[in-house]
Length: 314
Image 1 (cartoon, rainbow, N blue to C red):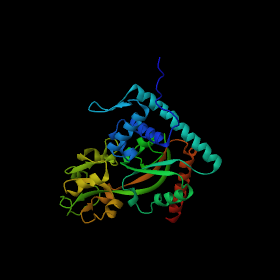
Image 2: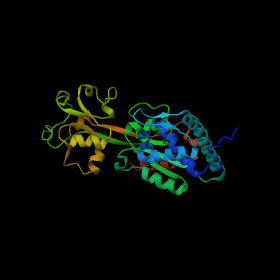
Image 3: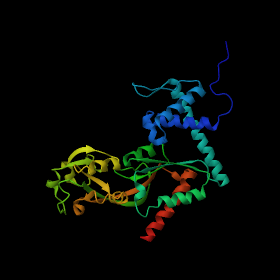
Image 4: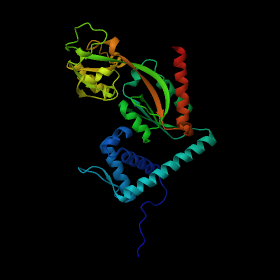
């Protein structure tokens, strides 16, 4: 019998680890397109990385096409082995970090969209402190819709997520950060544009189309009468929701700071501010026991310090 060809000969290179991380992200996300956000890579680039990995391993790892994404038997084996390998690499980095005092590795952050327009935001200062304390760490930041952050933290695509809690997340570590004010807006040309409004007008609001957002999903309504609102469209990304509101045909919720930072005050008007405005609180979210990860522990220490300073300044 001939000798079996080895799929991997010699030592694993950094390229192999990078390709395996991409492969793991694709499998965790359930497909190439679904992994674009978490990897911050174009679909074509992800396809090329997986093709390179298959070539290096001399194995077909997955089927992709009209029938959807599916792992082959070799793909399942490589995925399971990659989890063990990458976990071992992280554990090695953690042990070396603890013994040497230098923080090494990667920090994957996922932040809700348009968060940086919030005044007195501690995130930039925390990143500045972290970059000084851990200059060797590679920082990867993804921008996600608010409802996408918790799943990304839970399945390990990101180490730390920052978003609003639209539902309970008792399974995650939570650090309260800051608040934003959400207001109900209409665009220029909407019937409510020229009408002076205040308080709550439940019956009046039922006459107009509303863009559904995460807070308007069934069971998550901020106010009971929202159940009867005419949800005529849906847009969970704030910029997309703003596009519909700006047409003058829809009502919808946007953060006040976002409208101000984009200079839309002349095109958007807050209505029923006293009756239907509410506040969101942002949290930093991680999987349990984040202190066991030296990279994450270092960044959280920086973030906590900035949050405390902002609190004292108020």
